[in-house]
Image (cartoon, rainbow, N blue to C red; front, side, top):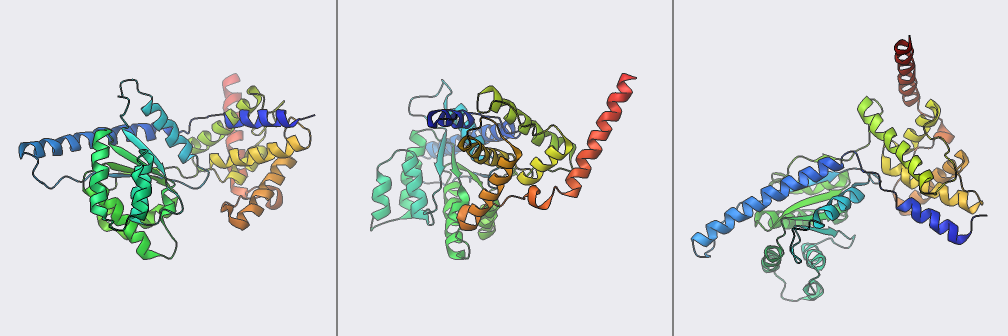
Amino acid sequence: MISRAERRRRLDAFDSIVIPHPRMNEVENRILDLIDDTHARIAKDEKRQAQVKGRSLPVDHLWVLPIIGPSGATKSKTISTVIERLLADKSLGDRDVPVLHATIRTSTRNPRALQAQILEAYGDNSSTVLLNARDYSETRVNADIRAIARDRKTSIVVFDEAHNMIINGAEKSTVAMAKSMKSLVNDGIFSIVCVGTNELAQLFVADKELAGRLVDTVDFGAFSIKEREERDYFFNFVGLLEDEMRLKGVIDKEIGLLDTVENRACVYDFASGVIGSVSRIMKTALDRAFANDRGFLKWDDIERSIQARNRASKVGDGVTYYDPFLKGVKRDTLRILAEEEAETSRQNAAAAS
């Protein structure tokens, strides 16, 4: 019998599982590089201004780092893990915020709202006043943000879920948001990390000068079934997830997600190579298993989970999963994995002889 308390314990244990994304090291290194480069450029500008006794001088622009991938690709979890690690540095002063994190709301659709979110992320009470101020000036507010950023030693602001700035079909709004971001980096306030879906590209198309501030994108796209290294990353994640589910007491026994070629093909196809989609489907499947007083998964739970998620996508969830139970596994997926299995068997046989 799975009691409510036991259900909660198991789901909390599932939520506590953290498996580093294969691109986490790349994200951390790119952010550390951006912090260093931004800090150096800000220091250079401040030295120049000191030499002219604070008189106004044009500053060098800073940069925008896009981190882009589909929904469920664990972009936000990865970036939050990296930020938490950076902010835990014991050498930081109590008020130092080298990396500021702001999750962009769907209501953040104009420059004033974006500036208010930055101030709110700092814990500055003027964010509320700003939204209702009659004598609003974007330039003046940017100057206030600059003062706070320098005081808190901020080099980078991370705009998580940055695609929420974009209203489909509202070109003027997209252009305004692109120009607002451009002002922040052109004025040398801080560099920006934009985390979001492929829709982010609309911001960079909307303003060519902003596009000129981009550094190479970190791609959180799906892992390709056609590339050995890519599919190894994907299936390594799946194997680690199932092991952790058992070790943390989420499930009593494993279902064998990777036990056969057919099982692996099924998992890859429903997730379309996106590792976060595996976690989403597993959590819904777990809830179904617990509701049926089972401490373990059946493939039927996974099938029903996919169907439930797809029904939800029709009313706003936005993510549709391939259903291998209804449509069958894809022939290319099965062929590639079967060929890999056969080659591995040949190599093992040759090594044993």
